[in-house]
Image 1 (cartoon, rainbow, N blue to C red):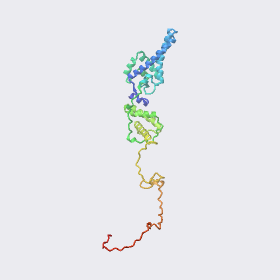
Image 2: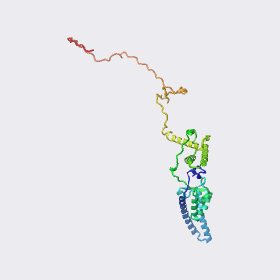
Image 3: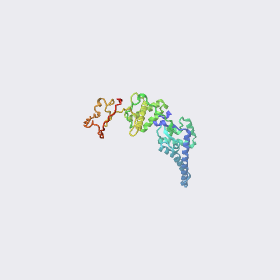
Image 4: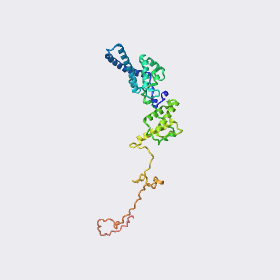
Length: 331
């Protein structure tokens, strides 16, 4: 796996293609090219029937080179290593450093592939793929290319390792707005697979990614901080910002904060007007104070306030003398 990581960080996600998938892709390409070649040959035979045998042979050779050699080279060059068969089976031709191929790579692969695939019916290509550690045929060896798999199961990607405790929260003020998504993807791929790489390759790649990230942020890598730890801390800070923007930003859920006790707030100020939570220190003079309660004078007593309410007029009854019984009602 570490042999693939010698150039761009995107090579971390690439794996050499196996012989069965490559054979199926080549078979599909040959089937399509064969159908096109037969159709073009029949059309040229009907068009050149009046020519002599030498001219017809020259036309046949030109048709063979054009359809079975020239067309595959042109397709791989324009599609950056994706022919119809490779696209169907999730394969792609890349350079040894993981970059896209160019015309010279496709030309060498196509020229040598004519001998080892077409003229020998793929026998030489199969033997070379078995012998090579990365499944390369002779065309790949001379062109400096490699056929890799593009479709990687999503479940195989690991989680980002946590940053060291002494780096937690150190890059909260770092400006990450100018970092492109491609660089973030390369950093994430490196962090999830750095333990699978050769130590020297991993260190060199971490230094290159850290330098690119520092150039984008405008702040150099702190001295004494390993590049892998720097990448881990910055990636963790980016994830934290995305989480705050998703759940604690405007329109989202408010992030949990410290408990604020309730008190007698005034309508003009968010600060408590009095009590143990009132503003203290130099900011106390600027905090608006609650208005002092205004004493309202009590109303004067009315002259008729102590008089009992008027009732119905009492009727005087004549007193009747009764004999004394000696009984005294209780007090």
